[in-house]
Image 1: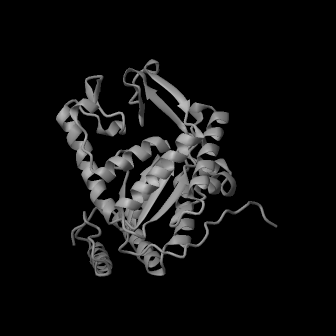
Image 2: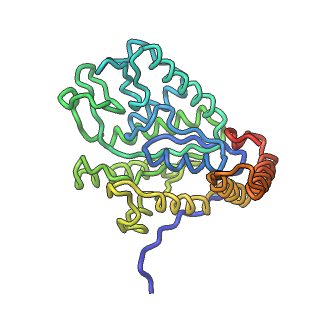
Image 3: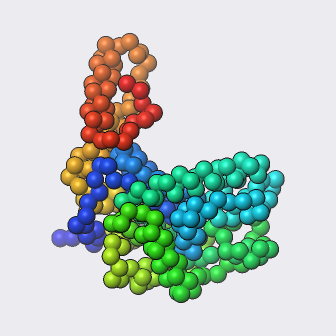
Length: 321
């Protein structure tokens, strides 16, 4: 007897190896997955523009990263005594124009450099809605809590969605390695403030546009992350208290599904051991001279050193043996 409809991710012929580089961009769910890549000590960069949701803004971000096109003073606006880029998340906002620009352009440079060597690019779309900043007639990635009266909200048209997705693919394939694999997902986080019907329409438009664009394209794939949460984990025990965002149990379940389909056997073992080491590093003691704790630390040091010998890139950087 079955009590749930399980959604599987199709096994990939190409596998993620321990030295592969993974670039991710998009919604907050992309950040949660990237955090797990980093805990597993894989090489990854996530959201050089901060969390962004709609395909137009993600396409714009990828284009700027591709071109290494630095931001200039005239592209910023001021609000609440802070200098702001409407293409970026509010985490880039500062009280000084040079600080905002330095933060933005440092991340842009990092993202450009990393993309050139990336083997995998994961793009997570969150919404088909977009806001236009009326004073500049500019479509924005983030409203930065500027009053609503300065914006016009609308759904991106199907043509705008497909154009944005296609242009993203073109720029990614041009800057990355020749055999880069591009994985598209739609975030399972519901934008309830848009309205439940409107959220469903928004997600449906994203799913339709992605499938239409990538059909027949080489090295472009759709991951059913949205479907896993909506159908496989369709119970509120898999959500945080806000009943909108998936909790850690759900995120880990999706990550495991992804890993089974995409990680090489070597990568699976490598990540599994690193997760265990991270758990061990959380252990605290009131007596650092306790012989048992000293022995525990010595064995942990040995495990970390064994893991470091398996890869060329640096891992557990913040941990000193």
